[in-house]
Amino acid sequence: MEEKGCNREEAISFLAGLRAEDVHPNQILSSMCTIPHPIAVAVHEMFSATNLGDPGLFPGTLKVEELLIRSIGELMHLASAGGYSTSGGTESNLQAIRIAKKLKPEVEQPNIVVPESVHFSFDKTCDMLGLAMRTVPYGKNYTVDAEKMAERIDKNTIAVVAVAGTTEYGMVDDVPAVAEIACESGCFCHVDAAFGGFVIPFLPDPAPFDFAVPGVDSISLDPHKMGLATIPCGCLLLRDPDVVSCLNVDTPYLTVKKQYTLAGTRPGADVAGAYAVIKHLGREGFRSMVAGCMENTRKLVAGMEACGFIRVVNPIMNVAAFTGGNAPAGWTVSHTRAGHLRIVVMPHVTRDVIEAFLADAASHSTIHKAASSSINYTIRR
Ligand code: 0PR
Image 1 (cartoon, protein in one colour):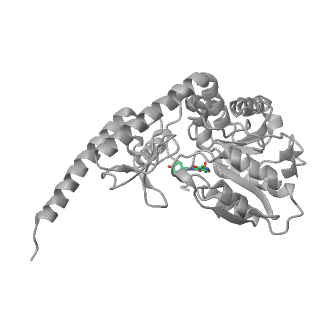
Image 2 (tube, rainbow, N blue to C red):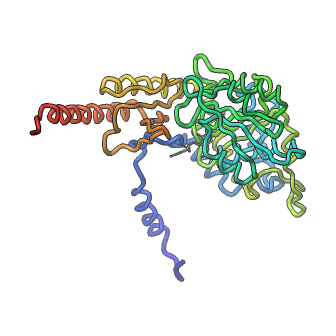
């Protein structure tokens, strides 16, 4: 820190310079976050001084959080669901498994049974909570093999996890089968819908994954992904609103005397922004946003196939994966652990962006073909 500060313009222009170094959103085809909705940005600023960690000081903001949880609970077919707003999927997953562990204090060497597709937040969770992680391989279509999952469960299993919208392929596990296995073995069932939670309910033929499925105990769902909220905004939802109290610690000098959240100081700004988007768009708005992403995903898949790429799965969400080549230069894509080219068609990946990407992919693939033909026809002696 310098002894003397600088004026506002200088500080802002310094930061603008650094911000300009970031990858332009038009080139980002790898992210599960997007440009927040303008209403989220405006409301974020309005609530920027709020702290849900001391809710007695911010009763209005607390009501907004309750409204957010209620709206998302309704979306998940359980208006009475409990829960709270987290910093994102990682924290929601960690807190869900913490609850599962508290519910089985008698287990000395606990494990959780998870699909191969799970997000790396479960590695962090297991490390922090001292749990063994038992991974179940894929069955069909990059979803968990439920039979193998049942085989991996034993008396030390405290929780099973299903993913609704996998990070790498956007697939939905057979949640009813996983929840049934959990019920039979008497362990907690957590659904990671961090990405899929704001997509699946708005698809024309949604797969069952939420509290309508008997046995689902908790769901992670992130407004800062497909909920168009500002970062960081996740939500943890619980079928039993009281169960979260098992995480309570005493907070004697705050306006509330107990706290179950992971963070102490907690922003209300992203929470209010997330709720503003929900209130403003309604189900109708989300349905049309998701329909647009799905249309662009189909366009991408058709265009990539025309360039000679091969789709790895039939996308049911706005995530597509391909083999058969690399992405053209200048675009930020990602690769799955299996090495497949992966593209997430978030709302900022508009039709124009897809068309520009496909035009590059087509010229790239022509060059590629030309190069390979010249090699094929060159007889080396
Ligand atoms: N669960 C699932 C199914 C996820 O896909 C993710 C994140 C998480 C949990 C963890 O969520 P938080 O990152 O909010 O804690 N999935 C993306 C990923 O790790 C997140 C992401 C977002 C990555 C933007 C890159 C990026 O630019 O791949």
